[in-house]
Image 1 (tube, rainbow, N blue to C red):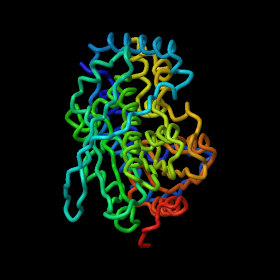
Image 2: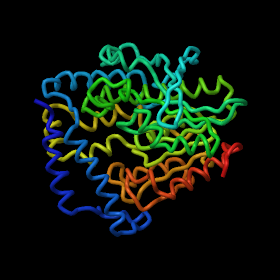
Image 3: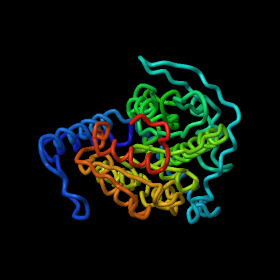
Image 4: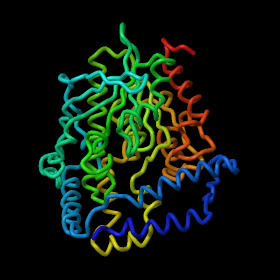
Length: 388
């Protein structure tokens, strides 16, 4: 028997949403959404993705409830004792320099790239609840990145951090317009594979286990994501990168925000359609009935939220200067609602933000997104080899 997330959420999503509630109440502090058939069709894509995701989600078993409560209690006690809750940056250790990595040539139709493979090296702190289970995910202990680089003298690098359920080279390279970034803009491109995704998966689909309801695993997944991206950045610097930008989308934007809080020397940071707050995501997509059931089982959500503070972008002061930071977001986003981007924008000191009249999925073809990226990369000096 599994937790009631799946059975409880599907009727809500499929019934209430598809019955016609396409447009939520608009916030008065956001630009007005331009309504119409085009926007409604974009919203439908988000709603369809969300409904199918909830219907097929891999969730924890009720038989694990005792372990979940015990791990949450022990983790909170340990984190409080070591001061990590009040000082989240102290929880994140700088990864050691990556010295041994393997690059293999691969090819998609008319799109050659390289697969970078390396030992992640991430381990939860000694004594952390869930440590041994996390280390037992053997496939996850190897890090990967899809790489496109130019021959000759060193060029600027763009690290593109994928979103949830990504992690396949075809999806990642297409999702970030890698051909455009590499050939037209002249950038070297590196797309890391997030923990539990792609070749690192532990379930049937990439991403299984990241948001299954086991929040200690979620904590370790997000901590390792930050670790791996920082380790990749260190490898690029050691290889002579003259400039490095980081561009993340959705869950990748969440990771990007955390990385930028720990790596102040980044030349450019772009957070696209950011899912900036894990607890807020859960509250917005999980029915209240499920929360009440979880509470009765001993899973107090306020305690979970406190534990996840160590991987919350809002718990870290901005480290990269405001003028190097950029955001874009959809006013009709149904997966990571616009308030995520608005609040991250406020937290970052109100840097350049581009809104578009579309949804989460539609960022792929929104002209405002492409214009924002061009502006960011040009302003930050990443395009000396561009063919515009």
